[in-house]
Image (cartoon, one colour):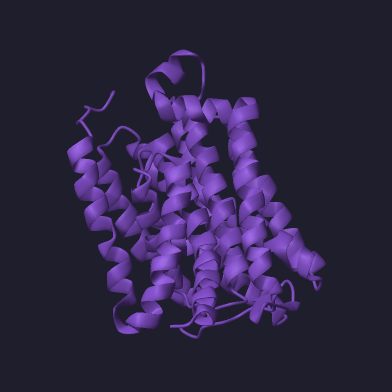
Length: 342
């Protein structure tokens, strides 16, 4: 291996690591707020990428009808809960089950966007509300269940969403047009504009999340819920709405990741699982609680995958997932077991 090849592998590792970083941030956010290991996070990536590909071929993505079904079921469930005497926050319900999906329907069925920016907005409006809707339908009734039961639900939900993805998008893979077709030659190293878009967007999102959690009331409420849910509830923070918001952010991050990665690799209905799993490895490096360590873990996963694809391409996935073993072993030696607060 000469220096030129090494630099190319480092570049690929940074670009892949940027996508895994977004996945890791979403997984850490969801787990810290709700204790849910959200395995279906990768499905948002595949759904957004394939919906964007459908729009660019002039078709209206069938994903919209899945969203409509989820909205209808959610409204029925909330109505039943209210009839049984449960308190229902109709403002947030109408936001995620009516307002945002209605905007998505207008964009896809009336506006029929041709410009790339409008297509991005339409995809984000379609995928983002799926997060809080999934939380309300699948997880909120089990909010007090153990982490193991929530994990089993996540596995079942992942399998269901992969099957739905196959039904909606078919088995054929798709790519989308790049956001930038620029290309630079720096010291003999070719750098594409799409790679810069991926790394730049990831950096902007990381900084935006930092300011969101540090400087806004909503972000601080999410942090309080992540640190101590009972204490947050006693202080008047609606922890159920925190679950809504964390899942919405996770879906938004997943959708952006799908839009970013679709121009550089072919996306199939089940591609999101592998991407989400590598983000999970990075999140484990951060102990499912530390955002900076999760980011560092994502870059490590990206570099390991890139160099493994050169030295032993047949075993690159094995090498990446083997990384989780020494991390878990080290954490088992340095972490004291703490009983659930509830």
